[in-house]
Amino acid sequence: MDFTDINTRGVVLLGCGKMGGAMLEGWLDRGLSPGAVTVIDPHPSDWLRGTGVALNAGLPDAPAITLIAVKPQMMGDALPSLRGLSDTLFVTVAAGTPIAAYEAAFGTGARVVRAMPNTPAAIGRGITAIVGNGAATQADLDLAEQFLSAVGEVVRLDSEEQMDAVTGLSGSGPAYVFHMIEAMAAAGEAQGLAPDLALRLARATVAGAGALAMKGEAPGQLRENVTSPGGTTQAGLAVLMEELPDLMIRTVRAAADRSRELRA
Ligand SMILES: NC(=O)C1=CN([C@@H]2O[C@H](COP(=O)(O)OP(=O)(O)OC[C@H]3O[C@@H](n4cnc5c(N)ncnc54)[C@H](O)[C@@H]3O)[C@@H](O)[C@H]2O)C=CC1
Ligand SMILES: O=C(O)[C@@H]1CCC=N1
Image 1 (tube, rainbow, N blue to C red):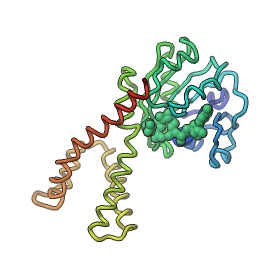
Image 2: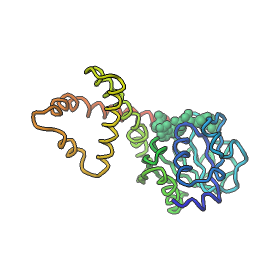
Image 3: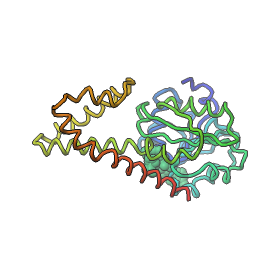
Image 4: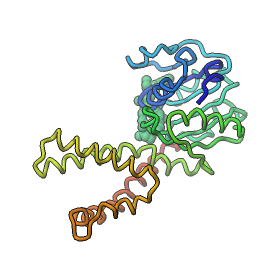
């Protein structure tokens, strides 16, 4: 992405923990100038202090983008720090908190894009779903999409209602996959492998399978390509496929339900 305009107008980041930090890391790697970034965060990490961004300083007049990346529970304390900003596009990544909450804080004319990213953004491999409010123009959505594309794929949603399901699937999803690596490694250990070897095999298997899946062939076909009739995979899948579909439905539903609760 061409960061020229954004580097001129500046970017404000409210909250720079795990998610805000992952995205900032990706943007800085791809050409966002540290001098263009103002971060408001009462507990800046050592990494953040080392980046050269302005920390807890005065806000620029009309930053191109103001990214909100605090926990939904902190929103009430945090949003007043942004009071006075009007000529900016607010992009929020908070789970649960509805667009209406930002309109209540900044006025109904405020341009707001609600986004749900995930932490692989730190290496440019995230996926972010976005939806704008009534005041956000096509140009605003294009800007948000361009900016977020610098750290991975972007998909546009038809309605804000879809955000809870997206949060349960791709927002929280990396944690499910990391747990899968942990569980596969533990299973390898249970079959007699040393812990470091089991972890190495599990991690590379998930990473390699993920990369192969991204080539576009249907995952079901890729699964069949591994499965020799009467072979080892078939024996393993007979166990996994009995449990996993229902377990995944319950997992994503629990996360989506929690997203709905956070809205209340
Ligand atoms: N961690 C993840 O994988 C994802 C997180 N999100 C959303 O991102 C947001 C942040 O989550 P995390 O980064 O995981 O949490 P976090 O706890 O790592 O980061 C929150 C940051 O906000 C700062 N903060 C607290 N009070 C503040 C205030 N009054 N003003 C400014 N900053 C303040 C904290 O010091 C901390 O650095 C949440 O709303 C979450 O729903 C969305 C997608 C994925
Ligand atoms: O756990 C959470 O609430 C946040 C939202 C999606 C991923 N992490």
